[in-house]
Length: 177
Image 1: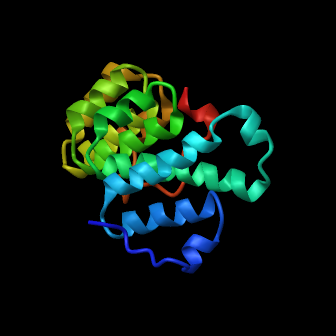
Image 2: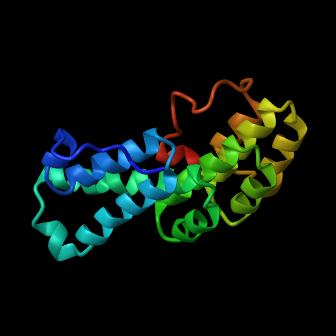
């Protein structure tokens, strides 16, 4: 499905990278994640070098960052989790986005595999998922097996009943042990 952007519209008059970012956002709104991925990727390709980024004003730096997050979201919505997983090896935003997608798809085994490798957000999401399913014993066992000294994980598994995700208060850095 082609993206509906009228020639001469405000979207095309914004200038780079804003016009491309707007077209990518419009593609997402229309459910065309393949086009959105291409638009977001073009922004990253154009502005990826450190020298190029150093010359950007604050609003363009923000647009490039938004394009990166949009790219990760579009990959997740398109079901391209293998690509997202590859990025997650070195990119914290990709790692968190992958973990959230696995949570929303109910993929406890995949979250557990990521938690085994030390991904704390995957562990926390695994606990939330298992508790939301009523699998409290499995959640507690996961904490015992994977992170018995992690105070936040123990609180999630053994403490208060599960609430809506994401919780309103993420753990402080020192509480993650």
